[in-house]
Length: 488
Image (cartoon, rainbow, N blue to C red; front, side, top):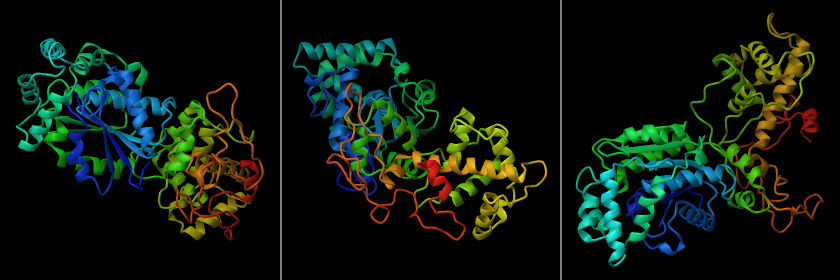
């Protein structure tokens, strides 16, 4: 179980290595992250008896993460571990893994979900090492381990790291090497992984071979459209041992600028989402909603001025706390997908056009102070605001703004952290079973034994302000009295 509020980095090592390759990163990042290295089957302290296939390694990692209990984590995959990390990420986002809380992925010279690019001579050489080991004591020969390390670094390792790397290669199981080169590295799992719309950091060594910058651009980058690619000049393939300080800096920046903002759920609430009481389909929907927003999001329906106005409107309609998420961006993306509440008033044009015209009518909103903004909002609600010509009529403005407020509020309510904030766990009415569990206690303020305690904002802020009525009649959760009935 997690012991503090730090996010967790679950680190999956390279072929021939172990969780120990992340020891330096653990020390460097200790103030900001709980760095948890996981030995993959056949490496480090993990027995090959649990299975060395790709799917068995994925299952092994999922079990380790579930046992740890973190519900706010980043997957870090180095080389072979990169392929496993991508598959765990895909199964977490589609709800099938039973995990919840994935916030980002870091690939360090990662092997792709598709067949790993590798020369025939290199593959044949390492297969010969593995087969010789199986015929002998079950491990690689010292000379072969020495060659493997020397061939995979841009410059000699420090004596301490060199000893660690050599020791890890020598204690790894030859059968795990054979499984990777004969099957795992050759499997094409790209269709299963698909396109992962998750914040990602991809790091390549400038002096690496097939999994260097060119390999990452060709094989991993297309699957992570939100990824940034960093190249460490002169580094080889064993990045956690060669450049731990630079990796630590990159991960801190990645978290600060791409991942760490926005609300998140408590471990207890996250465990309910990951439990058998929540269906995999519902879990997938909630996992997508919980992902951090892209700070570089470019509006798809609105122009830059209209989008800026929508963000200002969202701040007044649904004020958020110190960990806000991009409600306006999500509304724009929904408009682009044609997703809505399923109806519109006959007096209004289609949704996209109505939003553009309505926001054009508020093109001076940025010049108003907060009190004037609220007065403007109240005037629109009361049909007392006269928009400029060429936009909407006063009646249309009121109707559109009602739709806009509902869209903003609905988007805020749909976030798992908001659900916890308001005490809603109705999604956990049954998992992927024929006879769903449902609820027994249906009375107000009655909580069943499996339900998580959901503290209010005084105990834990999930990104929304407390609810107080202002003199404009708008609550500072953004829900008017009329809309409360609509939301119900």
